[in-house]
Length: 122
Image (tube, rainbow, N blue to C red; front, top):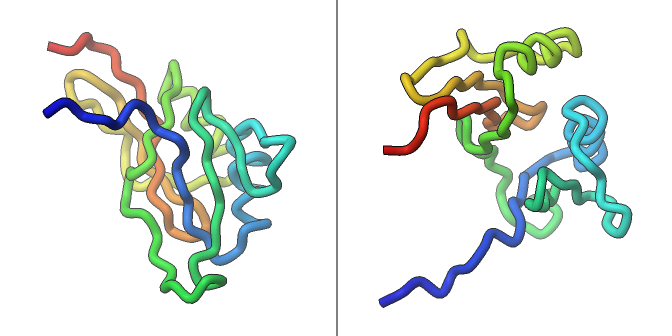
């Protein structure tokens, strides 16, 4: 049976402080804010939504390490730029033989990764 899933509509990022998260993702990481929605921003064609699970009676739980992989052209340069803004990374930059990855987290503990695939698939 063929999949009926055609695309990714958005990624929900849990937070305990939506304003603080917005400042981090837009101000620190430089992601594009959505002019029509206060707690939404864009990475390419993917919309990110900041939401507070506790505000609707759900428990807060951060996304695990490296859950959201953010593509950059140069992981080393992007890492240095973020370190200069006070971002602390989890360990050294990883080289898997096909990509570079540098893991970090937002203030809520959501796992993020700078990522660049440098070798073709297959």
